[in-house]
Length: 297
Image (cartoon, rainbow, N blue to C red):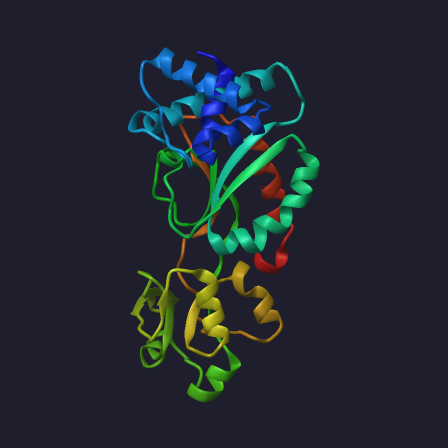
């Protein structure tokens, strides 16, 4: 099985375009199409659906993708172990990350990352939905949640401290809650499905089911609605710290910390070798986020 054919197939899965995928690997459209034909012929199955506008993976192609990525990751790891080829990680790194965290903290740090690793390119998917890494063909994902999938290997990049916040205008109009129980008489803004807030009190854990006029699936929208005075909400410190520092948000219920096991994690499938490009990404962002005391406090 030809490694170049596998690399091309992986790029087609990411771009849904044979010409574009071929171009990224220095291949003409005709050569790229020939490579895919040879790969399909060798396997005895059709891997992609071809239309005049784009291509998509067949059911067999979807099933074959993670195995092709495993082969390429193993080859890269083997080459790195003996110092073969370029000393710098190379290729395309497919990354999934939460939309808000990606925009606020991943994107601003990529200039330096690409300077350090000029032979790497990144396909970055920003979504607040939890994405299946293997099915989606991703090398790595950033997650800010509790980890429940034991099939993934995880490395903690930073704490994800959660705070209860409100705007000064809201507090001036409706007053400040003095205990978690007081939240039941306030408007609370929630991320969809996260309306049960758990606090640490001197009498033990206290669960408060909150309600309000707004629930949304985006963390930045929750934060901005809070700034606009629509209610009280939970914010990650990495999302809210600048607005707390400039006075747009005020932390409330400081004596009742939220109980949460969330953190910023880099995760990747346990079935794969840790490719040099994945290790480079994890090491870089672990150091980068470790130097951000404003939202680690």
